[in-house]
Image (tube, rainbow, N blue to C red):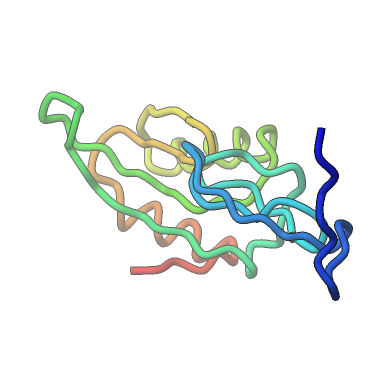
Length: 125
């Protein structure tokens, strides 16, 4: 096995590698700040004023049924589950929490947006 050549001015401790895998682009190695990929529940809760959410109504892939999707959460799975339940109760509809996305059955984008803004979240149009 051949020995690796040392590059002047570079140490193995400071190597930073960027990867584009199935989970999207990520920085790996020392010096890389950890942010969970979009769509995955976080390991810790971020305050609402530091989170930018998107509220959209869509019917793609749902046999013509309209649903409201809220994406962009940076919350733990348990906190997200509780918030999802509160959003669904406020809208008076069913739904689910998938990853870091809350899905509410029906077109409730304005109700969900108002509810989240009152809780301190930033909503991106």
